[in-house]
Image (cartoon, rainbow, N blue to C red; front, side):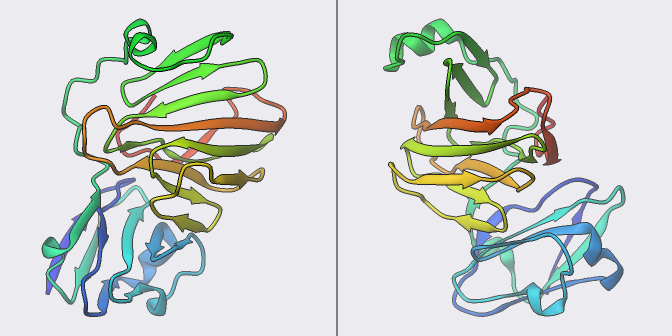
Length: 224
């Protein structure tokens, strides 16, 4: 048995199960306070013990939404499972913002943008009717929802993991289109471990666009 303690508003690693079924045990009273990735499902409500059975070779992750620590028990040694994404790998590292000038010189950024939003894990170029977003390797944007707009993503570069609604899509091909209706969970993770292997997406929207219209439901590295 493997036991893991998960602090408030933190997630486990995103792992891939091996050839045996994985049984996760969490106190029943805590099930209403977690998010769960089980394979290609993203579960947020009415989670039960059957949902905590991870099939062989399936991806899995648990997020503690509460303000108290919870304990997770596994029937297998999950430390041997393949690591797909560690949301805290760079938590204690220095976080300098991406240099927009340097980035433009080293990447083929189209002219005509009207704003640039550099962060330490991503950089966004805003055009009159779309955004162009680049996400660093081994990083991702927060799990979030919008209340006043829908978003439409086109994968331009890389093979990201995409959360949209209650589905998770793994290693998505370039050219793929994803729709995120108003009020649905969405996120993009760049699982690439090679330096400068960015994921790039074209983001369009309908409804009222406001940078403040964002609710982060899982914010692993305390992005602000």
